[in-house]
Length: 327
Length: 257
Image (cartoon, rainbow over all chains, first blue to last red; front, side):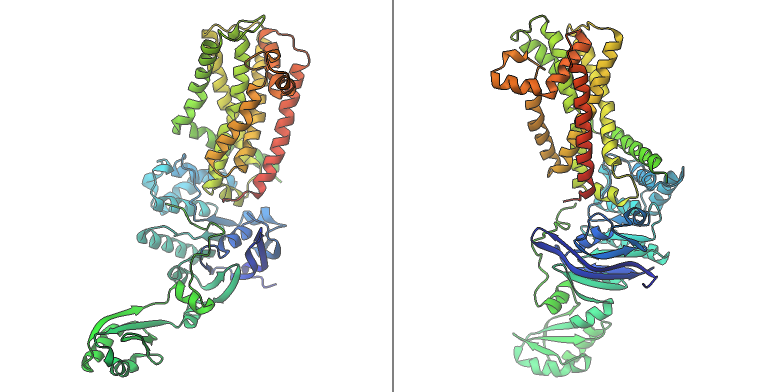
């Protein structure tokens, strides 16, 4: 067995009645890296996290986390993981400090350490001023930060983050990303689930795309984007009869042949982003082509899904109830 | 290794958590304090004139009954709290921690013993003001209080199971009421059993609430005990053991829905 895999799962299967939440999934995260599980609601992401954190027993397959078997060595495994999720699992009727101290005591940290650790984390997560306020007075972003802090109390070498930024405002998202990056820089292994390609893109070293309980692609973010087709420039012309002239003018910018789509619009695959719009506008202007609209299009989760599955990444009836609520 | 010590420490951490909640959720505090007062006063003054209780003033007859009912319901906070922990994902967090598998439940049921003691003290005080008087030695009164705490503890485990089995905090409350009200009403708590229709009498006579109320009347009022006292202790221990086993098994598989 490769000794440096912090998370290693093979052939994981789990059904709820007739619904196959996981239908044979293999996962691997090397120590100190971030593995992103990307997929829509109901894809099986939360089920995978629950099996790896010992909350659920798989129907088939096996998994090891920090070298411990999820079924046979669950107690030892739990000492080495932290879990934070979409639910912000903190007690509303306790203060922020009380929540973290409670978690520290339940990890059986040495005497005095839970309180020290709580103060340290509240400081780091910008919650020191709110330390002695009841959590029910916290905003959604504050609760999420506290939840993540709770997962870090025992400095676990492996972190499981189940949609850590779902429902957060953009600023809180970026703050949380920076915190996660800090943990990874300090050597923590992270398994992160997300519905957002940009989040996986920024944080994950490897991304596993799952849909309906199966892994449909695996690779680095660049590799996935290549499969999707990278970025493109969408141009809409004022005069649809000029499409050929416009295509010729934009040819030098394109990484592949510009595609002419209906109604005087062009899709131009490009390999870079910087300065593309300005250059396109200049070239079209020189060629005497009038522009109604021009925009960069970046690959989204929908594009990944369209390309990989041939259908849009619509919510598939949420059989897992992933993140449908949360405020 | 340190299994037992960790288990006790985990339980106490979570008992403290339940206690901290009380002053912070004043509506809950009302249910431990005002509700028992209300029940004592309503029963004594509304029904007291209509119910015939040979050999006893109604207030004396009633107090052991109303105390047993209050203890039976004392554990509803456990059902409510566990259902909330499930809903909010806290059970997922606790189950991912290297802590005892029973502490979340035993912490809550232990905290209920504290709140039951508060309710018990308030009810006895109000009862005494409304004309209730003990006809027993201090030892018997103390034994009665002990029996009530044991009985309340047993029902906290019933509520633990209800809380882990229901789909929402609201549902856990109504399930608790639906299951336990018939038990307390079809018993010797509020009326003499022989005043009921025959079918109900048959149920009331095997009802553990009847046994427990009879035991408390024996301890507080020197009523004839028969086997009621040991019967009540046996019921409480049996209910606690059965529902603790069921609840822990359920907790081990519980995940946020």
